Length: 108
Image (cartoon, rainbow, N blue to C red; front, side, top):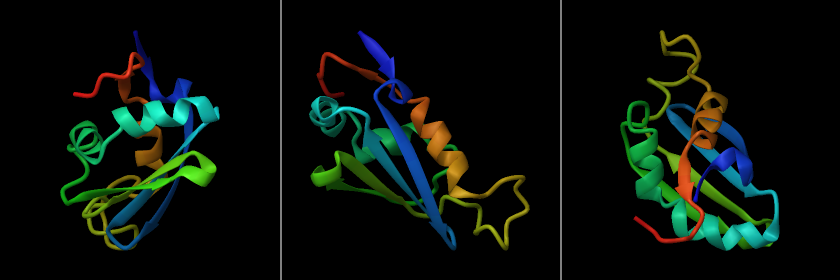
């Protein structure tokens, strides 16, 4: 069975210059291990590759049931230098929640 991430988690975002930081936070503690297995740096890079031009690094934050993704070269130069309509990281957080994962837990 497949689900979109917004069914399992919510997302917060921050940005600094051309780097976006996305925090994916499980609604339930029981879903955190599934997110750890299925939402990798590579899968986020593939899902958001049309926007993220640099490296994606994942950090696990188990005490709060969260995964943090540092997305480099993700904001078209940054909020103050970009001509893009909305170069803020919050746009990427909503896009990440549209990612679909296999809830049976088999990784790609």
